[in-house]
Image (cartoon, rainbow over all chains, first blue to last red; front, side, top):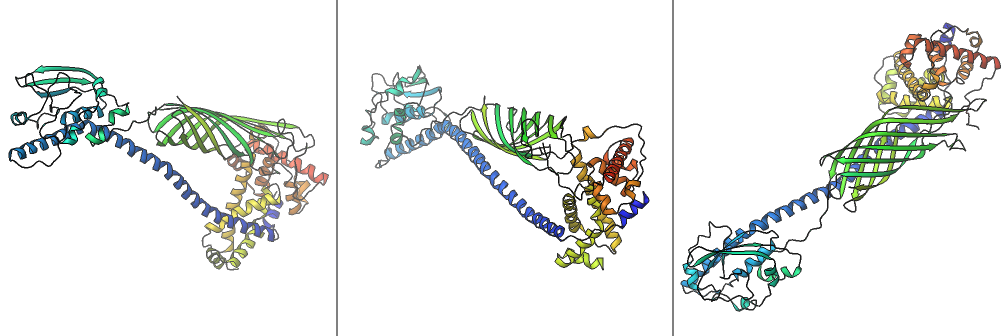
Length: 409
Length: 187
């Protein structure tokens, strides 16, 4: 034994030029590999920035819609105060005998339409000027005698006295211009039909409270025809409803490379071979960031050196995993997530003995393995989506790349 | 040869110095992957990948012996890892648990061969047999050290060594020494 060790220690191998060339090749590849690695990071960052931009823009858009809803609801009060202020200013100007050049607006009609904009059934209090046996008009006297405190009432305004708050005809006050008069024949029957209930309660001799609960809808475009003329507030854009589903089913078909090649005696180094990998999974969203699910997978590859791959040289891997999903982006249409899974993995490999017998050897093992996947999903409807996946199974250091079709419910 | 200057040149990426250092290491250490691996091609691959790491992480050694010891240690570990990684799949089948093994098999059959012939014979063993044989007979490791390194029992290591020696003797007796064979799968 000592002789053998001494021989081994003293042994020197003659230099081989081809080995050095191979060494230089590996060195160059490592350098290029490092450069490619940095490029990969840049590409990944770029790819991530696209869905991130979508996500942020969708967040901003949804926030704008909420703000618009809130502002529409409160706009009535603000605008009402502004109009009343203008109205009082005009009143003062009139009594100073100044020429009124500012175009007056039909307040009653405007409020009706304004209420129609807000698609919510609300209870309104309407203060009316009441004069027996008179047509519903707003006169100078009414205005002068109007001592109501508008600054504190948030949902009250002047309107014409009528049992029904809506009127087919609008009487023109001395402050109204011919432009307004031309609009008195405007058909607001639709608005009238949308009023569900109107109640009147007399407070004083000259005033009454009209309570109405309109059932307002803006499905009919005709409802908004008057808006550009009478009210600068744009109608809310009807938004498409997009249901959010928590449960997801997904079927993936992936391209994978692993080692199905025989290296039984260690004389042939294993090489990665293109193979396929099918994965079916289910997951449920716990919240906007985390989901839990499970998946089953099947991968199979043939030995390129074996002609009869189905029965002789092949390798297949099956697994059942529990998965944790971490959503980086989770919007209506775009999802970007990282999946980490672990579970039972069974691997079976069938190779041919490289001896005189050429017998078939089957190796099988079952153990715990892990999987990590990075996936981007695009919902082309609220239920159906497509995904692009890239991941790694910790079995033979195997990477995979594939596409999925999914269904949410 | 001034090893210190050589290393300085390698750090500055001077091609001549790189070549000189590579030749020095190749002549002294290529026997290691040659013993552990199945053929010269595989051994060259393992050696060169180790050399890339060695060249990258080389520090200022004062003399040739300390450099060779350091490189030898890295290379040996890389070789063992490489063979273990290859052998792990068939571990279930081939790592037989042996309890009472007579480990002594005479080395007479191979003692008369020169080192090139011995390495050629060793290359015809399978991975696990070759691993145990090289670690015990050539590297001088004990069965306990081998068992710890390969995560097997001591008796299993003895059994592999005995099997390796038997097979080597058969190979030598048949005189079927094939230098670095490239086998193909056949049906």
